[in-house]
Amino acid sequence: MRAALAVSGELTDTAALAEVWDRCRDVRRDDPDVWIHVDLMPGNLLVRDGRLVAFIDLDTVGVGDPAVDLMPAWNLLDAGSRETYRRALGVDDATWERGRGWALEQAINALHYYVETNPVMAGIARHTLRAVLR
Image (cartoon, rainbow, N blue to C red; front, side):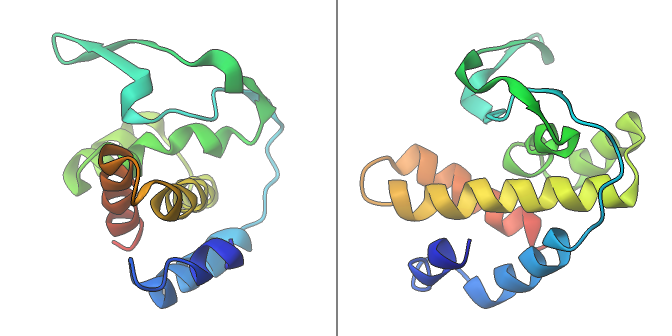
């Protein structure tokens, strides 16, 4: 994370993101590992008639922190929808903050990696980083 933040200083507010990261990183976790997807990016979510019907890119499926799969709250949703999503899932504060941290970790690494080569992915990363700061 520190390396990704260091190379992204001219792309985003890395000082504010570092504060968010420190807060998310230090959240205690007591829940067990579960099956997770790990890469629930907008392009991997299939929607029909406004409803999620499937997800693709199963290469990253594994066992780990359930908060990882909360990333769509920040990489896909706006602020109002994010709160609705959280209430619907009944996610506690600690899990929610860990999810924010996972979203931040993925986005800050994607931003500097894709900024010159894939404007769509860089745009999603920028959206996510703005969202984790709220």
